[in-house]
Image (tube, rainbow, N blue to C red; front, side):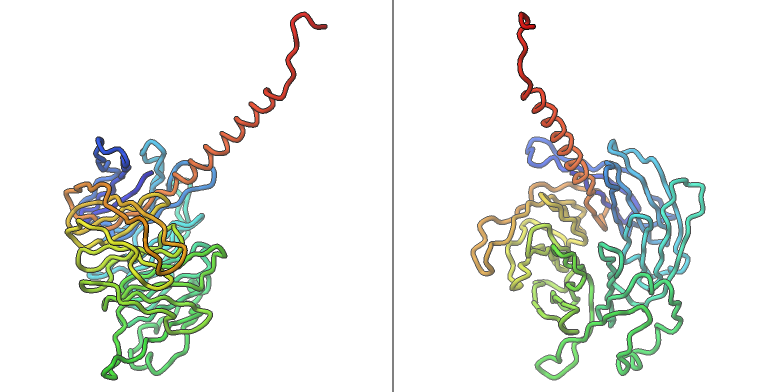
Length: 393
């Protein structure tokens, strides 16, 4: 099990938890040392080719630079690719990056959307396409099939776009006045769905739109219609784009401030949510109840990386933590038998900003499983053969 993290100094590190070995302490391995020119790491994404045990790691930095690393099983870098988002201005940041099969997609808080081809030869000039989205964005996610993406932000409602059309239409007036945008519900070119603000509060006042994080909720049908958002007001809202523009569920979950990070887990009906305090919890998507919370945190969790067996989080207290995870009960409202714990915490010296899971362990398991099947089949052939006596004809 391998995880990649980035920090505010631009360092890229590898973490391979030793859990459940209590006598061995995990130590982060520096993959690439940062410098003052590139700034801090703001976004990370990983991808693994079928049948390969190497990993592609895409990273976006605070100065607009971005890079792609091919990391072998022994943690050596075998290939690099670099580019720069020239439209990124001071005070703006990368809010999302996604490493796909043939392209790396990225988006910044000022709406600079980019797709750059993955080249096998570093000397080749990669093909790049750009698009323009609204400004004041806080989070951006590309769906697994790469056909749609979603974003949300400061007075920017949750919106779903067609990826191909977003790059075909170069719209110049996306940042028109907010008054016109409120009166006009017409979708932008390439936009296929936009959420509607929740109802006014008890005093009849309009509730501000402050989306801090979002993610798709993947299901067995791989539908892109289900999304969940976290807000600066501390709410977690679930949307179904097929039924309504307003959220189908709205839960107030944050204990301190707003929602900092939000990720879907690998177990059914679960997401992990952190707030501006030091609270990190597993949430039941069926009713919004907290399944369990992790204890011993001393800083706000800024990034979460779930995996099938463990979860890793990074916090502003300079610690990287390894957590245990457990599935939700079969029926909503039932008692949770097991509760997640902090299995290990690793001091990282500088403040970590983002962490992602290296999915190559899945590829390794598949390859190992296929090898074991081939080995078993060979042994079956020998076992089924009849013995021949030396004295026989």
